[in-house]
Image 1 (cartoon, rainbow over the protein chains, first blue to last red):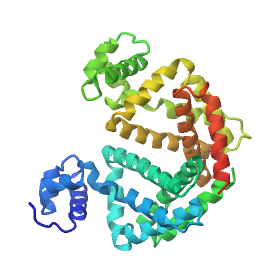
Image 2 (tube, chains in turn blue, green):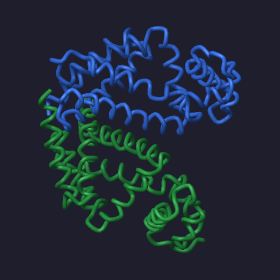
Image 3 (spheres, each protein chain N blue to C red):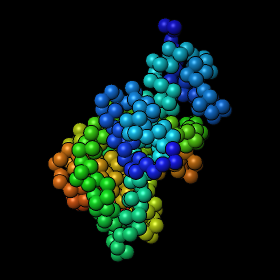
Image 4 (cartoon, rainbow over the protein chains, first blue to last red):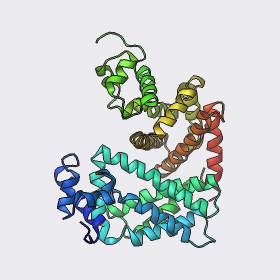
Length: 188
Length: 188
């Protein structure tokens, strides 16, 4: 209450993930999550709108992608700019020490329809954020939409390879997936 | 109860949409929907798993797309096969007499986060169904994924143009959107 709570979002997310894995999503309350993290319910709701949101970082990834796309070299085309953004994701979010956490998170989400729904909506929000950031770089609307869809597909492929351990570094995996996706799209 | 209930899914969907628009999604129960449609709660649950599902046709669109993709001419490439599938959607689902209904459905979904979540998940299911049906035609996995993403994007663009009245016929609008998307993807 009023005291400084270092890393509250991370602690809440970690606690939630552990509880969901231990006793199931349905059998875990927001109070359980806050208690496990050593925090209060009101701290929880300062950071996340509901129980589902705790696994989705409340918009952090969309902000990270948007700012990295805005900061990519001016001469970079849409997919190249997405490559720079994926590098930023690898440096700042999907780091080596987050891999085990990410694999557990993936399996917890896969097991719960409510979490899969939230993930689907978050996926749309990420695609929308990439598309908007590309338009901000002067990319025409439809081209920005198509690039964002291809970027989201590549990001999903890379996340799967990285979280299951078949790729070492997220940014590199994402650049490779972007190349593969670009080659497939060029064949149409 | 045991009697024949003609067009029960359509009647339930229409009743639900009217009630959601009149008094809001939150203030409508499954019993209200069944009563308005002149049916019982158990009939509702024979057709839809929950209140949200009533606006999403319980998998009908995924089946329609899958069978139309399987039936497309053997020589058709992935995007061309998607064009045939969109024609089938225009003939069998997004027909002229469904347009007003679709526009209302779109505005009701946009107004309710829970419905937007279900729509996002349904969107993933449609993309997955298109991708699987393309693989069934012998299209390599990644190419099928990319084609399905482009197909879903084109379908969304066409649905928007058709339901707001800026395009007359859904199949034609979808083929045009597919051409635009293909041209944008080819520029990368």
